[in-house]
Length: 614
Image 1 (cartoon, helix red, strand yellow):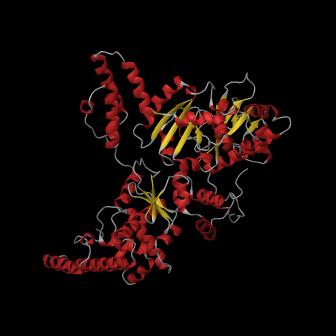
Image 2: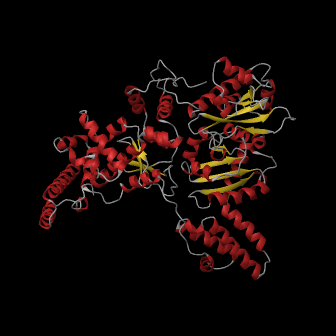
Image 3: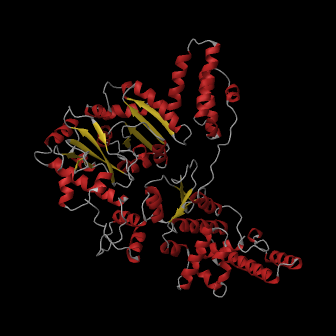
């Protein structure tokens, strides 16, 4: 059913209740494998192509920050960026997650934008799930669908967990339901749940007489459906929802919302070929199993999985499928920091798929044996190469090795980590019967990829990333100190111009300064927490988090060192102001440098004469 929190006000009280109920470590940890590091947690950043953990999560401040791409903010920001939600959607999602009921609003649709929104698509999916489940449970209309489920041995518990349903044979069942609720057709058309008549008059149901498998995103929201025919004469056998703003087939994994925690706990994801295989595995206790949606593994799938685990096993029915899968897996995952293995059922059983195997006596134990014997994809590839080279002459052997190297280079051999590259070269050398140096000499030198001019968004992220390591001026440091300890702002009561927005050359930093000054004018302490509460601007919040993290790192989160740093920066800006007032002559510059040196503070924060911001 549509979310009961959909029609709500967005007051500060509700926002703070949701914020207080959300632990950012637990939230991020549901999507990224985190490891403790001192007083923080680290993991792979989900917002760029991260191969080495560069995202920090800070429990004491309830923030996250990536030191490479500059992404950062609070729990709301994380959910917005990860799930491409609007701010209201993020609040709604986190409220549901925490069991908080938001304040109802009187004029429900007053602020809705025209067109089909992501929320409207989600609501359409939620209503359709309820409808299909009702049909499934109906004594007559759901009988054929229930018979298929019973033959598959799927338990009632799994039916409920995976929300399995049925579409009726009539062509207007769902259509009549949404009209009875006086709902618009547009979101249902966009989601493929109903279709417009080819004659342009009227609508009809998009799914008829089918067993329905809802497809969920990582948060458990319905984003699409997979549908299996009930009658053998109906074509096609399987049918998916069309792609939409909330559903991209190439980046979606079936059962990911059920499997993500088990995947993180075990450090391993198992990928099956179909819905019923995944359900059968979960029913047998293999909770870390997901399935692709009738497509080969893609880089988008890899990006989802590598945030959760370091190993993936592809579970396939037989050797012919395994060969193709291995080749595809190498193409997709070769340069990714993730181990990939291939497990084939036909090595230990004549069952045609995991679903059939798990119905047999001892099937679960056999499947464990199959998974334990999974082969690394490169070992699999090189074993096939070795088999093909038996009895080969020198010329054939040379050509085969060169072709393998060329193919691996195409897949990114030059870009993988040096240790891994060396291990791959060693493995190929062993198979070919030549020394590693010979293989290494065949690998051509690297070349830089042409880079397009950055977009405005990329430029802003670059500015934010610069805050983590670039040389900053005293005014940037002053701003960062205030973010770390809002009480320091009182020291600028008569010197607000020290952190005026116009003093900062980067627009995103000027926005932070403007927000600090605005909060101060309201009598509030303008620290990082206040900034995150007051602003809905993701760029502003990311810059504030990056700046505060930089100061925290440089002062080791020690209050005394922070205050000492603040005083030194304050003096430097005072000197800069005096230098400006004097006209910036040579003797004034010499005196400025002498007095700055006498402060004995970090010289990296000394502003250049004539540069207010550094």
